[in-house]
Length: 219
Image 1 (cartoon, rainbow, N blue to C red):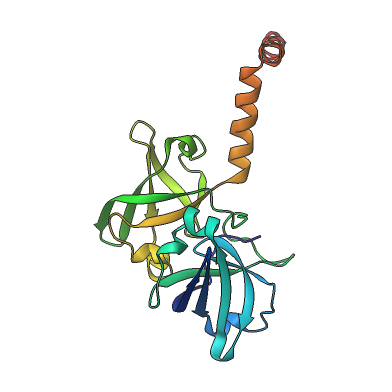
Image 2: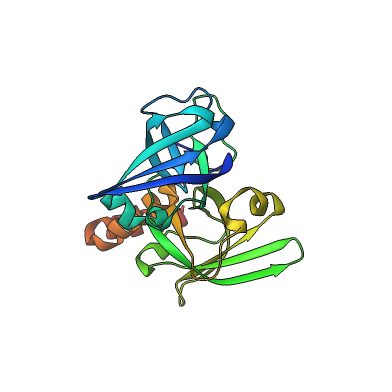
């Protein structure tokens, strides 16, 4: 599990492709201190397992075909910079929101607006996931916990506004129009929305809920 607070913007120093598998090597520097084989690390918001460690903070991960297909990790190459966060420990401060590292989908940057210190990014997301993206709600974008600043359901887009710290420390300060980012919708929001949908689709549960609401209003 992760907090959505990116700990470092690190370089990809190696990519080795095999059949249905890609090995990537990151120069994590001090972020690799004490890291062990089997540890979980969020790379652009994707939970990966450490498969090899080396000198000078070099850390390797194996990325399977499904992950390459459903995230933007299939697009990285040596020299690419990625967001990194090591898994949190019980007792650590949760500065963002709890994220699992299980990417929901990718979204494409369709608008980019810079004004002073403000950087507003607008992403186009598959409509099936937009119902889980709420104004002022949380969303994980390339592993960074971000508050949604606006939602346009008709266009299937949402926007985020970045502070200078996020611009400086994450990939979100460097992406260009058309680039894809990894999205993880907030699990609590998804659970609530899906539960309400199931209730509304069940006539008996819907009737019971309406009766309960009516009783409450009368009281």
